[in-house]
Amino acid sequence: MFVGTQPIPGLLKALEDSHDVRGNAAAALGKIGSETAIPRLLKAFKDSDEYVRALAAAALGKIGSETAIPRLLKALKDSDQYVRGNAAAALANICSETAIAGLLKALEDSDDDVRRNAAFALGNIGSETAIPGLLKALEDSYFEVRLNAAFALGKIGSETAIPGLLKALEDSNSYVREKAVEALGKIGSETAIPGLLKALEDYDKDVRRKAAEALGNIGTETAIPGLLKALEDSDDDVRLNAAFALGKIGSETAIPGLLKALEDSDDDVRWNAAVALAKIGSETAIAGLLKALEDSDDDVRGKAVEALAKIGSETAIPELLKALEHPNEYVRRYAAEALGNIGSETAIAGLLKALEDSDEYVRGYAAFALGNIGSETAIAGLLKALEDSDEYVRRKAVFALANIGSETAIPELLKALEDSNKDVRRKAVFALANIGSETAIPELLKALEHSYEYVRSNAVEALAKIGLGNSDCEVTQGFRTP
Image 1 (spheres, one colour):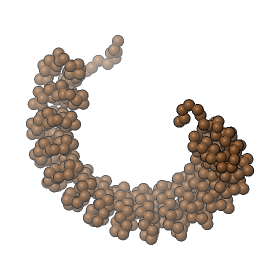
Image 2: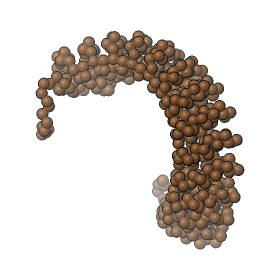
Image 3: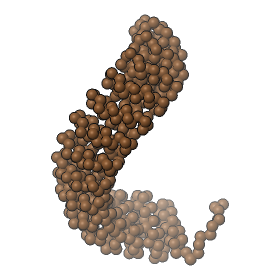
Image 4: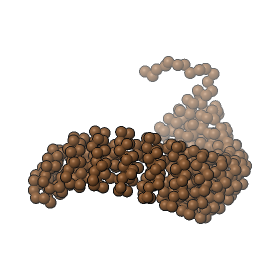
């Protein structure tokens, strides 16, 4: 944004200067992007110099106003290929359906770059009326035109393009095949699966990688055998995408292959295998995931614990308790979360010990887990956690005590009404109301005389909730605050 003297009037005047100055002025006006320059830039298409006309087209594309479309369409027929190419690129930026007819005609231009830019522009516009022309462009002599045509058809997303894109999977250029695979994945039709399975065996690794991703997007079980085979591909990224795709499909038939992938030489493949097993959520994966808790990579171990948490089987508890003492804090956090999800009282002793962990999030996760389990044997440890130096831990401890709902926690919860953190105080109100005992009322009444307004306010809210919870009458409807 310019402050003070605006450069536009000077630049507009410079459009009448020498060859180089006119071109640079057009480029500068495009960078500034003001619509006030449009009339003069449109006039620049009459310039005798193709360099100036080309830069005027580019500038109008950057400004992006539809008022330039008629002149840019005319520029698609300019005698100079650079002007025509920039006009097509400009129409791609403006992205209006009124340009489709001209751009379809530009797909037959004698210049490679013009055809390439026209195909890209039609993809940006995204209208199905462009499909016949783009399908024809898939057979263009220049590979970048074919590539952009495949990209455009994927962006439009119509199933009518599938036969042409399947044929493009046999293109001599690997970049075109890759874009065709990507487009078929975006369209997402099962009719593309045979072709995509064949693409999983392409000699180019990027094509195979995109094929695995596309099959995951489509998400049908008919792709599973091919994806399982891809888990043994020589390329790390292909194996990674195959594991991720199998997770998206979510069938238990993939579990043996994914368990084998948990031992892959590549960290990311093992991580994605753990993610996939978590999504599938079968207890048959537990043994392999427990073994993955000893993985050399921190992230893999953490994801294995997370997977075990989602599966939620008690058979995992002994190893998860061991994971609570792992040197990596992320593994300890996930272990605490997993134990809370499983909800067995056999985990309580380990989780109480975790309330004294050096990492505040481990302590918080442990408190939350104990609340999920809901046993009164955890109360003493949770009451101690109410004095933790970290507000996150105190908040989770209050939440846990609310879930357990024992009156023995009331004195400490009343103290928590004076906590320095508003969220802890709020949770304490919720906990006292949840316990719902009248034994809290005398102390709450005392709290109404507290010197701090927020303590008085929280006490009022707790009393209101306890009172409503214990009332023998329904709350009268229809009262309005004056």
